[in-house]
Length: 406
Image (cartoon, rainbow, N blue to C red; front, side):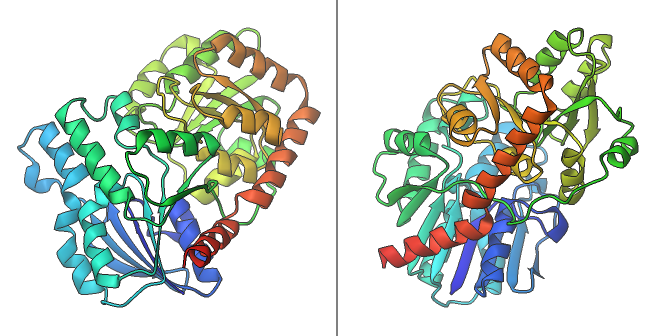
């Protein structure tokens, strides 16, 4: 089959990929011909083409804000969210041929690639279109203060709805997301199904825990709670710091490790200068292959968010924690079914509402009581991942949806 993926995140390094990389690689491993068009939001790459995973042709176009250097931040944001994809069309048109593809895969927010999507759908005439919807744009972003309410919000929602309704099937992360989709989108034309998050169909390698810990100057015998991911609004950084403050005396052997980067990094560094947070260590961005070694040497994976949004989420950092066999301590918004799935369906940790700091603290105390229990939870997470959340199973589900629709 010929597969075309359109996204805003795709690493040009095989060793440090995103979920989009894992999906493209899984399609390629099964013998499919894959093309990826990436409108790179980081702006840190160059316009280029590259072949990865032996049979994945990547067309990469960075969002270039240089021409808006002297414009207000609001203008830059509007360009990035709604018009950059139009400027990418000339480069893409020279790199992609007008041939019919079997499966076209888009990712949310669809509004950010609206003009590219419109152009590509006309050029390649896909037999089947699948939307992977993770972010309920612009609702989620407005609740985090990233998109203003009012006219801009209504226009953004109209564009997002228009883009999503071009797809035959819309895949969301959980049943709570299915219900929210039907309430949030005016006319969901395509069939809606649950498509769990995914990762490479291999578990993290066993590591020499003592050696990995020594390499980061971590205590050999302490309990390490790791938080990995983007340091952006909504990811629960403040909650992590509050939890660390509340347990520093009752759990002196616990060290909180933060790995990642993002706009909240300066705030985090300032906070960690305080003596009351000596039980928190920030190590910066870690490449994915090294990150897996790091978390495999830890004891508990932290899945936190702000808990202030009404949009149900299913944090992607869960994947690598499962692969590494880490039990999870969760603190999420009340709207999601993540806590029920993690704690009762999988049995891979404890999770509660982010606003309930006392319950989060009690859950951490429970997890710190028994290493045997933590390892059992970790095994449960690994088993669930292998049965439901590999990139291979995701490929099979998308292909099955295409066959069913045609």
